[in-house]
Length: 310
Image (cartoon, rainbow, N blue to C red; front, side, top):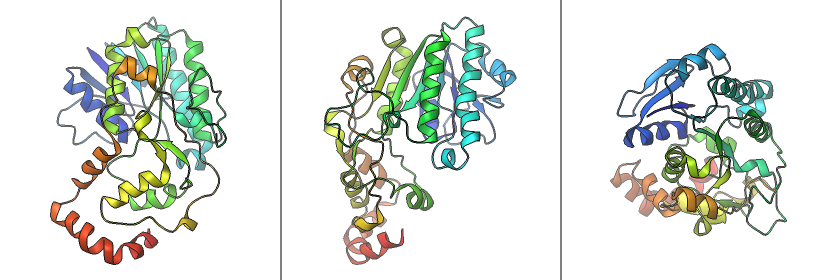
């Protein structure tokens, strides 16, 4: 079975390609610029532009399923809104058009985002697509909402997965400086391990008959519902570092919350890992002696200075 993955060079896409390959799929990627590296296998590669029909037509040849991950992400969506709309919404529209012309009856999995709900500081229940409306507050979220609308209107067979917070193993210092302080420490969020998100996406294809036409929340489940400070405490604590000063963090609520994932877990069976597993994975990115030094010497002595320099 051949699956086309758009956005295969992104943080999530890279792992999704590998996960499909491990499940025996033939993986094809539509790439715009850089070649995929470090996968452990060579995917079929079609070079092109997600907004151009000719590129999509070539990439779709002989494909049995499509996983659509391509798109700009913050902060670039907010810095270049017109480009974001052209790529994120226009790319989805172009892809749907080609799939529709080919009958529209292959699995189409769209990675949306939990931020479409907007800011919900006064909501006490876990958010659910069927009960809580969308109130997008950013260009990125608006593009996701519009893409969802296009998908539902298109007539193709689809499943929409609204992904919650998925930290990756490699975060640059510049990303931490520009994105890490946008969320208030007491803001609710639901952690989801990147491996679990990949399982959910692969299972959305293999179990498509069960999820077709649905919009599902993808998150870590009740045990992974926490506040932002809990996530940071575990991540920084992996290396013996304290939290940065509270004054560094935003005060305005951020569009993350807790979610009802009962239905998605029943259908996709993907919730296997926790924030503690992520911490273990994170530590493995650094030589064990260095982790020991960070936890027992550098962190306790210089930790407060280090986090002030972030």
